[in-house]
Length: 386
Length: 97
Image (cartoon, rainbow over all chains, first blue to last red; front, side):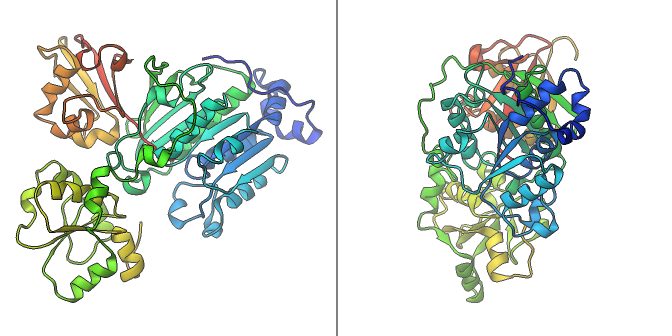
């Protein structure tokens, strides 16, 4: 959809700015007017991770005058496969500060504002208030619904992008002029149904493809050029190398968004069934080690995927992927005559599996809090985490 | 696509439940609706059906199904007609960033 420019032009460009942005200025559709609008624009990136990296770097280079960064996390080595705004020497640093240093190196003429906080219902409206446009590059459903609802309440547009393994989805939502995120996906998937990138992985360079589209849409919205993705969803498959477009319309049955809610509860980390199953049936890795050392007879079942089992496993564990148990196919492989201990990577999938195992009548079953990650950090530090 | 066939597409994140394919072509079922297409697939691909429909046989709310680009929630849900040559596309919400 074609929209009027989001931002009024700045009064002028300095000589330095004219030199720096000359390749924009000579495009008639951008020109001095468009570049002055970019200079006057205030854009907030939610997350300085996989998607936030290309978004922030390209918007900084493009001359967006004010860039905000919401990020509470620190740089981890496992981020560097895709989060190209951070480097080896940034490991352990604040991601927000590392991202600021990178974009200031790309373009010292812009203003960077840091919001080193976890976005929640209490602070989101205040954080968003000063910005013209939000770019959503978060990594969980709860924050995505929070960002959407806050943008609806504040009448702000935002560019939404989402990735998983080889799949990317990207769109623009602006409730005042078209659909919002809830018109596309009214509710999040039940906990455990759709894995996160931390659980399922993501092709690093996918971030560049989807993040670059997000940055492109931001530039178009600010300057008012072209057809934006408002009302369209782009669906990218990196292996097929296809982009498909799907129409997104306002949902006539959609509930109006009138206030913020408790997004953790709305999205859940684990399902109610899993929480009930895990209550009183959760052991720590220390307790698991004690059971092993005491020579106790039990079956240790690893419910991750085969490629994860190849990376690292707990000695003596037997691999039976979660879906095999949930579908009922692998229930016959579980022992009836001894206790069952279930684990996964972090304890989410194992809690879901525990609920199914108990529902199938296995009473003597527990799951391991923190999974193989906790085992590798507390019990056997020689093992890798991933 | 041969005449009388329909095409079902799923995102790569669901390909494991469709025999590692993102696309399958099948003869137009006698019940030429979204329900009929899903019923025709469930024997060979029960995992996919569980991802798309609940135990009660309803469309899962976080999964979108489009017939030739139109969201079936606006056109009759599982009763939406699927004409010969149509593309039925399943889309799932993802949240990685």
